[in-house]
Each structure stands twice: as structure tokens, then as C-alpha cells.
Amino acid sequence: MRVKELEKKIEELGIDDLHYSLYGELKSDSIILYQNYNKWEIFYMDERGSRKQLGLFDEEEQACNFLYELLVKDCDERRKELASELDANSPWKGKTIKDLEQDLNKLKLRFKSELTYLEIFFFQESIVLRNENQKWNLYIKYLSYSNNKEMLIKTFIHEDTMCNFLYKYCLQKLDFEKAYFYVQ
Image (tube, rainbow, N blue to C red; front, side, top):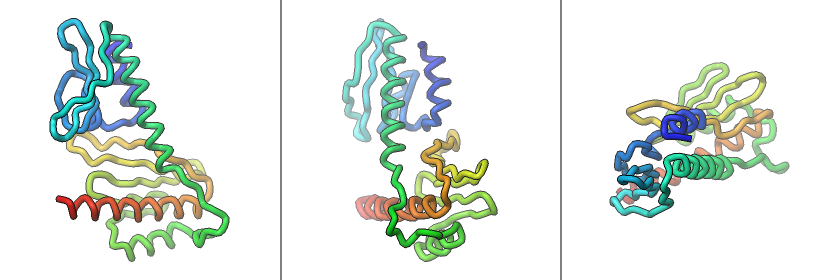
């Protein structure tokens, strides 16, 4: 595939363009595809501008295929990290969205709630929960200036399983943000 086709496929995955660059733009904390004369480079640029070479290719198609596989793998790993299930002894058994909203209030989290929709706001992203076709779909929405793309993370059939997962995720997210702002 070529760069234009790669761009469309990445869009379909719902990966925020903060995490990659396809046209050589040097962005920190991103994977970059860069055409250097007759070679195609793929590298990761960290927040300090240091590069980590991930691949060097003679052909555009080779580089694009490699980058696509790399992004798909990263996307799958993120989904697996977020995927956990309700265990049988959980205090969340039988809990509903209303119970979750009460707990979110106790955590002092900002959220917006409607009948079939819940959005919880964090520093650089929000978590969106929608009831679609008798299933609860959980999305991450990256709050960037260029777009607000949503990436499907997990689908739940049972409301209590979803509430348990989301509450645990919020606790982890709060711990991370506290540590982040403490370091800053």
C-alpha cells in the first residue's frame, strides 16, 4: 500500500494523529514515516527529540505495510491493557450506571450523562460509553485540537461488568494523572 491508502486505513482504526506522522512532520512522542531521498525511514521520536530507528526500506509499499502492522499491533496492545472482566466475587455484581455515577461524583470526576450515553472527562482524553444495540460500547476520545476521534476499546453485554471495568479504569487514570501533575 502507499501513503494515501495507509492514511485511510489508519483512520479506520481510529488512531489519533498525535501518535504518528505520515508526511515527515517531526512530532514528539510519535512514530514517523520519513522519505529520505530514495529511502523510507520509520522511527519513533521521543519527547526530547531523540530518534529510535524502527525500520529502513527501499520501497514505499514496504514501509507503509510495516508501519500499518506496527500501528495495528500497538492498537491491539492498548485494547488488551484495558480489557479486564468482572470476577465472580466483585462488589459490582448487579450495579448500574446510576451507581457508577454516584461513585464518579465521590471521585470528583467531571462527566456528562444521558439515558444511553456517559462521557467522563480526563486531562487529554475522555471515556465515552454508549448503549448501542443492547450492548455497551466503550470508546476513548482523544481531545486534540485537530479532531476528536473515538477508538472502540471494548464492548460489554452486562451493565455491571461494564461499570466495574469503567470504575477500575477511572481509578487507574486518576492515579496516573496525579503522578503526572506531581512530576510537572
